[in-house]
Amino acid sequence: MDEYQADVQDPSAAKRRGRPRVANKKKQYTLTMRPDMYEQAREEADRRGISFSALIANALVEYLDK
Image 1 (cartoon, rainbow, N blue to C red):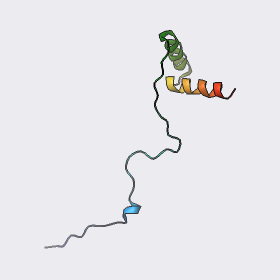
Image 2 (image 1 turned 90 degrees about the vertical axis):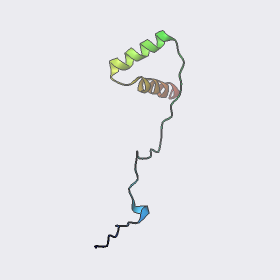
Image 3 (image 1 turned 30 degrees about the vertical axis):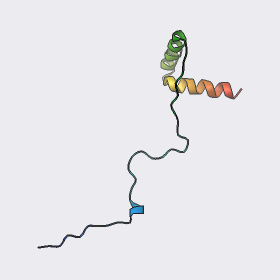
Image 4 (image 1 turned 45 degrees about the vertical axis):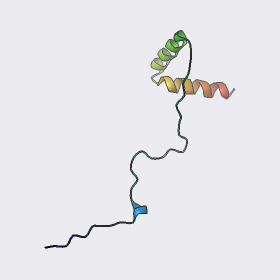
C-alpha cells in the first residue's frame, strides 16, 4: 500500500479567502428626507448614470469643500 503524505505549506503563505480589505472602507447610514426630494435625487442619479448613493456622496463632498 502506498503511503500518502499531504503537501503542507507555510500557513502564512496561504492565500486569504474572501474580499480584499479596503483601506477606506465605506459604511452604510440611514438618510431621512421628503419623498419628493428623494424622487428628484433618484431621477438625477438615473440621468447621470450613477447610483443614488454616489449622487448623495458627491453632493456632500461638494458642499463640504465650499
